[in-house]
Image 1: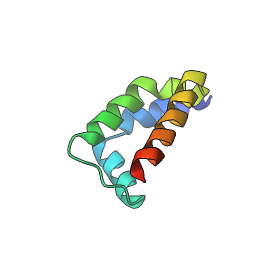
Image 2: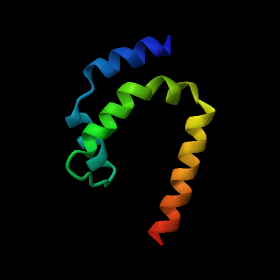
Image 3: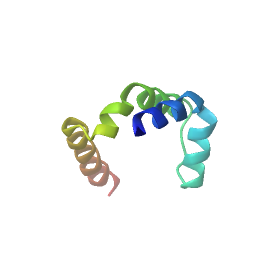
Length: 71
């Protein structure tokens, strides 16, 4: 059931929505990053929703390296 709701929501998702969400959460996107995020969401939402193990490991690695290079 949730998959149907998500699919309907994604039909209405826009780059403005992504930029508004980023701004609301104090994230500054560089030019073009909104499109990268949009494409990722549209192409990978099912894996994210289902909690794919590969996705979870990717996020874990991303956070480790982000923290390592941020400091």
